[in-house]
Length: 346
Image (cartoon, rainbow, N blue to C red; front, top):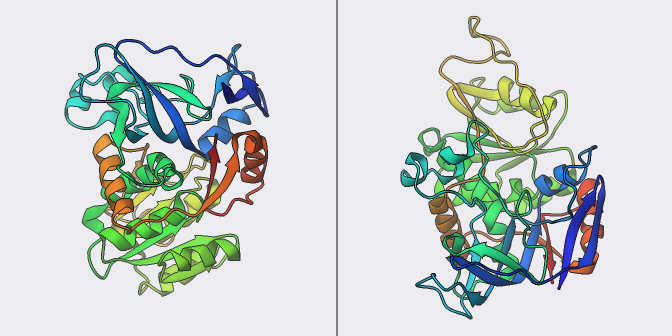
């Protein structure tokens, strides 16, 4: 089969590899579509060789069951589904509580095995998956279903974690209207009564935010914090979701989150927010506000995200590429040229 593989720093290429063999508790999935994420790009752009063997990329994908392991029950050839991106132990206290994204077996790093970032992923014609990671999607189009596995799951989890702040009349800020941010705008409109302010460095991304339901779009710059404070009576936004995660966006979040508000760090740009234990006031961290690094989501979050997509409340803006065009998709993402989500179709 063909697979898009990481073979070294800044190098992805389509290669011929064997179709995976499955174990008794696995499924073989014929891939229908696979999304391209900034996490994939972070791995590819890492300056050092991360492993000796090539790695098939892709952690958000959907497809059709091609073969079923001998010990698997309840699944059958021909079923269509999406794959939950954390392959966890399933038995620890966190998994049993429904917090699979922080599985105890993953240790302090709390990053469970994830296809395309450890095991071989779904940017291929076929992929082996644990049977319990499969979530049925009915007749939902693969182009829409595949990105739900991360581009919807991750903002949904972050937003659900700030639900106490998202009452009617509240203000939510979404920073970075890319693959996750444009979906976050739609989720905020679907599950809350909050006013949504979108922030980005590009006008076309703000146009996308408006099409997704944002009430206001602001170009990121020196005056953005003052504009947000002005539009919230000087108090700030009840929830700020940062889908970029660089120093500038972290600074903006600190300066604009309201007292008792929620700041959710989702982007992995390495930014460092300045949080101090000094008296609150001015541009610093306000009293009562919380900050949380939000990783992926739970299997329940995935099921609920899919329900929004199936109900027509969520539509992901997609740029379609063939598997052979995968390197081009990565290059466009690296340059910030992708509108919404790049999705590969084998």
